[in-house]
Image 1 (cartoon, helix red, strand yellow):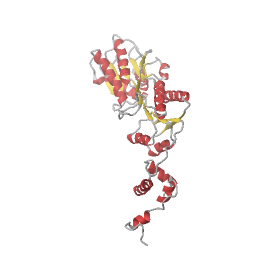
Image 2 (spheres, helix red, strand yellow):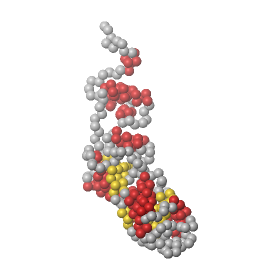
Image 3 (cartoon, one colour):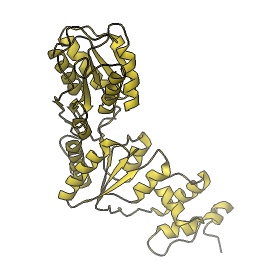
Image 4 (cartoon, one colour):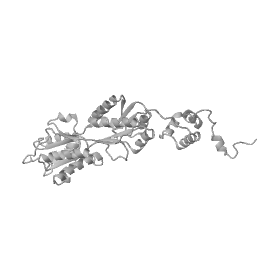
Length: 351
């Protein structure tokens, strides 16, 4: 009797598993390929940790049997991810997410992780309803979420995002402009700025707003009055020492965040200057703590809780399969004037 597989190679005969007698399952593919079920799952989900030969063998069986993975249900949880949780911003953001999730009867899970594939894999395997990322996601991480059909929203992005990536941010340019305009209206002409990381778009926008206000008032932009520092009290203190020791020192300083402003307070004390009699200071964020310092800090209010609420609403809408008219939202900033700003002294105090 003629062999019905005549013309096939010995390798084809050896590698061809028995034909399945029922629906093809992951377990059947794993048994046919001689691998574990988690290995097949990794191949299906595009995850790392599988050799090229094994991946090719599993993919061949998936294609040969026409395996279709059933659509995965997602849990009724929005996952909020941070790179670093130890910050004063985190509490305000979590408050907004919890408030909105509670109204929608959705749970919240807070995660902190770095750039390790396994951590993102673990989060994806939890199948959240949607993801709100305070951490800036890499291209690969965004692709991994999209591949698994998990909607996500980026909170307050620090870099330019590809078209179509949903995000919620603040009006950083407007905030920077309102801070500088306030100091100009008080009569200041030597206004310095301590900026944040120069490569991050939100801090670029705050600085651009500051420059715009100076230009509108016909004031020259003195690049010697603009320095960049870490977003910490120590960074602000060091930068303020640098600015306040120049011969024609500034009479006012605008900082990229409130922690830097607290560093300016420290530098002023160390140099024998009083705020605001000798130096006006404006921060950015308007964290609750700045109303308790002495003197209470004038700051651009970044509505972190409201931003978190809007971002959560957007994430939940995307998770329900809705198509919002806008996937990029900017929440308005406002200036909170307190006691750290005043008109400049007629004769600036020498250091």
